Length: 193
Image (cartoon, one colour):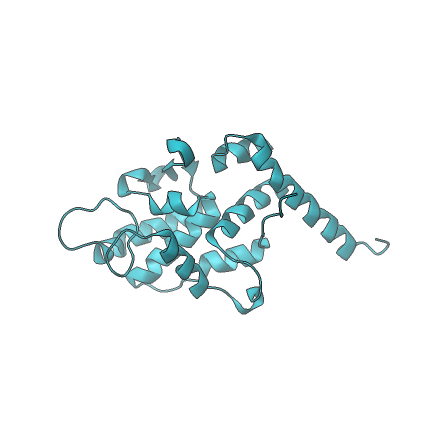
């Protein structure tokens, strides 16, 4: 049997996503990256592949090129939209290469397109002490996104579409995580459990 994915609690995920605080370009980028990973459930490769033309902040939507070259539209929540707006308006220009027009949305400190390793390192910078010893990766934020949607009452087919899964069986793994958390909450909360 496959191991269940690591999932953060809602407060842990929100703490990570909102950890970057400041107005310098790197911090603005970091906040936009983390808010998008958790708020839209993007794969790290999808996030790194984003170009400026893929985002529509005014209608809170992003166009993503997923696995197998499948394109999908993904909603962007209020927090991610706000973080993206600040980054694009006040940070991206300072991080972009000086020569030529690079369409990439996110850049690393060397003015190259942000890569999966960069995102993993960025996430580690904002790891909180209470997460020490626990697995934390960009995919952890994706798993948390899906689990929190299901726990909030979203239909599994909607979550499947948002995640870009071709198979419902892949998405169903998140129902097991949700059920496990439900039973843990029951055992921890009920006096006769």
